[in-house]
Image 1 (cartoon, rainbow, N blue to C red):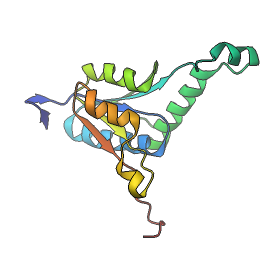
Image 2 (image 1 turned 135 degrees about the vertical axis):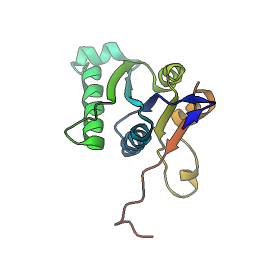
Image 3 (image 1 turned 90 degrees about the vertical axis):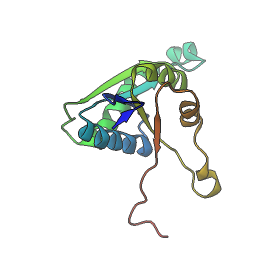
Image 4 (image 1 turned 30 degrees about the horizontal axis):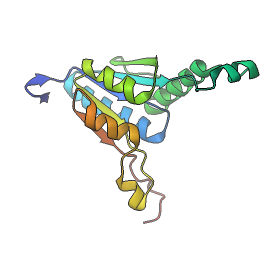
Amino acid sequence: MSVAGAPIARILVGVDGSEPSVEALRQAQRFATSLGAKVEAMGCWEYPQMYAGYVMMGIGQFEEGARAILDEAVKTAFGDETPANVTVSLVRGHPRETLIEASRNADMMVVGRRGHGGFGGLLLGSVSSALVAHAHCPVLVVHTPEKAHRAS
């Protein structure tokens, strides 16, 4: 498989810890395995606008919390053994802008869709919509498969 004649060697996955982002990791790895590609699981974090107030209150551990969420998502997707072709990175910045910029160095991007079911579920979230519109590589938006125990 290739994009515009070039082989896919690097797949970027936006990970926020949600179930759809874990599924995006799984799907990216399925593609990567058959293509011999590398997968980068990227989490993003940023300080809230009122950061100084949080520090004064003693709850300024935003980067550590984001790292824990990212690591847990990777573990949920792959178990205790992260595949050798998967790297994990945590970047400070808003997810939309950070992932768009990171897409410059990717051959493909995979992100999860946070559907809300019904009519609302037809819409993409703000980050996935921005990536589809502005990424510098093809974007695959995946959703979480229906669970067997859900009623039809």
